[in-house]
Length: 292
Image (cartoon, rainbow, N blue to C red):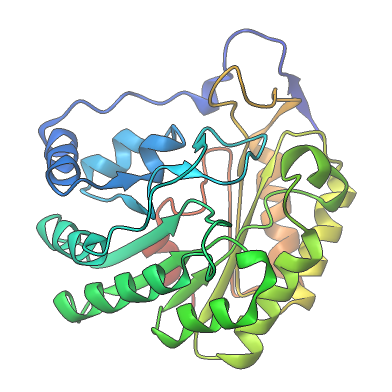
């Protein structure tokens, strides 16, 4: 890949973002705090937070803000989570309504401590949003539920429009990037959702800049196509804290464009690829741009 060595202290210009300080940004934060809710935008230190909050958009992070796994790329706190808040589904629905959301994205920390992995909380949140905002679409971004099919089914039966589960990186880097996850398990999850619930759009995402080679990324895309995944997002890994993995390389925008072209030729329904692309970034526009 054509890269800029990550040891350069300054971010390349194509990765710089303004910090959001407008009234809309503050309004979204007040809505979230008023309902005692978390977002992955804040917990994962997303560079697009200002832009999304400015448009009154946020990706709701349910099941608390402590994760039972410690992935090398993620800044969400690892620790012992509290029991799920039974009122959280309704809180998410009310917050989404106050924000005027027409497209609601729900994700979570990984909850390996719970027998169902938190799948019921996902289902209850989907139902609460659909009840309060019947004209809105719902996208979920779930953990792998350690491969438990019943947990995956619980989420699917609640009726999300899009089921997202990120593979994140190439299989040879899982030991470093996602040591408690399994590449095949993630592919099997996506395959199961599409086979058993064909009306649900399936989606996955990956990061570049962790040391992968282009041919390895292409092989990963082929695996996702074999798993009948509909939508793909590709973005640049950016180190959220000093405790996270270092960036190996900053991949230039033209490489993202090349991978997008390759993905489209493979036959994905949609592929969104760029340095600042994130799994939920512009999710509404990305989904609406895809022909069923």
